[in-house]
Length: 391
Image (cartoon, rainbow, N blue to C red; front, side, top):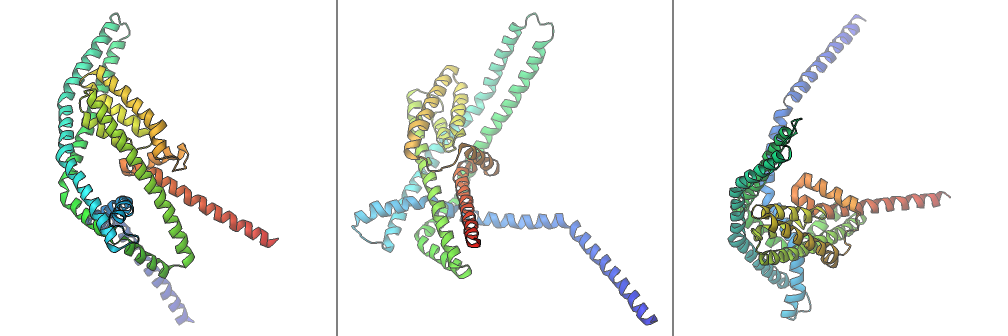
């Protein structure tokens, strides 16, 4: 009896000891969590940096694939009078597309980028004078308005105006500087760009083999019905993304070219910079056209307020033409998403991924809504079948 009691007491102490040891280990583990998290995040960051060119190459291949298919179908087959696909069709089409792409990149780097950089540099140099001049004019107008000021309204207005101009100038300078640094950063990453282009070239050539390999892997891991449903969903999602990206790109390119031509005829300053901003901002649904028009107005206002108003009026008319005629002609109603969800996707995508997120947020939300609708329809159908069986 006594031996049993001592064994039980010993076991009790051992349990306490194990709990204490585990508590110490858990405390040390939690205490080192910051170092562990920092170490893991650093390693993940290094892996992501290494994989960035390859992820960019997949994106480039995905964007260029419709153009390669068009060349293959409408140009190469007709030129060589081929009625069936051969391994050389895609190779020739891919080479032609990459020749065009490289020529565009060379044109942008050698002609467009230097002129945009010069325009930004000029804006930064004229900005302080512009701010000082208009601030003095506004203060003089307030002085004249409140000559017999009893309640010191003039002093408060002066203070608020000084703060407004100061904060506005800081934001504007920071935006232009960041834009300049982004241009420099893009042009300095020549090696990564070349690597991404080379990898995307081989991805486009071996696209069919890569897709068949991925399908074989999925069929080895999952049931056929899941793989078939996944393939069907991917085709619909691809169709949505490709139609939106290509349609919006063509639409924005046409709008940018029109803006460049008309602004040149108007002899507007910073024509290339404003035209490029209008072209890029037009890619963002709803808000983009207004952003481009406002930025164009501000830039021209540094030179002439009167000319800036004419530029604003022209850009407003151009966006009306795009929204009412050109956009519907090119895009139609391809998204099938309500304005509420479009605005939500733009805000969320912009906050997470910047300008690219604002652009791709619309097709992304369209695909998500499509998947949710399909899931709801399937669940309702299953529920209906169960109800019929039970009856």
